[in-house]
Length: 491
View (cartoon, rainbow, N blue to C red):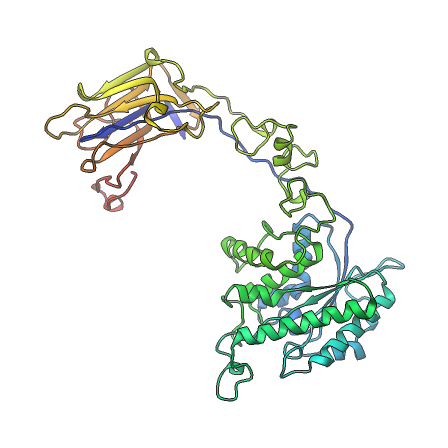
């Protein structure tokens, strides 16, 4: 909070009956470090496919360059060197077409200038979307895929094959409708056939070349896991931006063998929440998410170079802390040496009796303040920010005496403590009450002169300052302003 005048800090409690308990602790403000940028050697990626690879169905995706361009952008954002990408996809074509008409790009790519003697690291193969099913030409699909990969291998013996498993048509598509429906079992039947077809093609490649160099990128499986949730374009066939993003995530994760968590959304039409949701679906199907070629010190399947490394020592912050190379005194997962300490101008952990340093303003004899109270004695655990597991704190109680119901309360102000400029006020609090009838408020604030009982309008007091009032039972009363007209838990 920022203040242009000096003010004390107050804690208080207003209630009709019952007792409240508050633990107060002031802690430092911090800034978060960012990961250092690192990159590996750029991969060379050759994409064969059709409109699904080109991103048709999404204006954003198609104008950007389709799935290959999104994978390229994700690789850069993931801390890798920008891969050299050749997009050899042709709309409406099968792998047969590419095998017969489009192999020149293997030795002579058009989308980047290769180094002399360059080799492909991966070829991404996406077939015509109906061919791996019973209404297509499954055997031809399998033969052509293996043959096209073989041509790539003749140029680049070490190249791997990533099989871009496509997705079923959207629910409601004509292939699922009518007595002569092609897939009476709906999208699940079509996806099962696509999945089986790509798995058979994967085995064909490995058997024919006697090498474990093919792997399916299960894009369609990820689509199915979402329940086909708004991934198709309006034609119920191609992908919209969400669908293209999910496809690119799965292919990226399959190529780089890593989690896609935390990558950017790429498309302006996606929200951060949507991107995170789709990343989770991608992570669930990526076949080798932890087979990393780079270090992963905390075994979370995310390369170390994509983790926060505020001190730029090449080791993620949590590994520095876990390994003892860095301290983390406030347990916020940021090494202490990376914190911007703004200086603790005042704090009280109440581990000793500091009552002499506080001014207590009470509404009546039944309103009590107990310093150095052991909350462990009433089975309340250590506060979240307490050091060393201590359960000691400040106990504030209101209306501890019996009698007719009446509003009352108690406030505590640190005596002679005045603060100016920018500062943050932080505390830990536990609140409870003795019976369900009353409403209890716990109040914390700034800009008070330290002589008044802060609280609610029920208390006859010339309240000052700005304070936050929390209720333990959801009974903060409605106020007098249009924006304050509902019952709520805080005010």
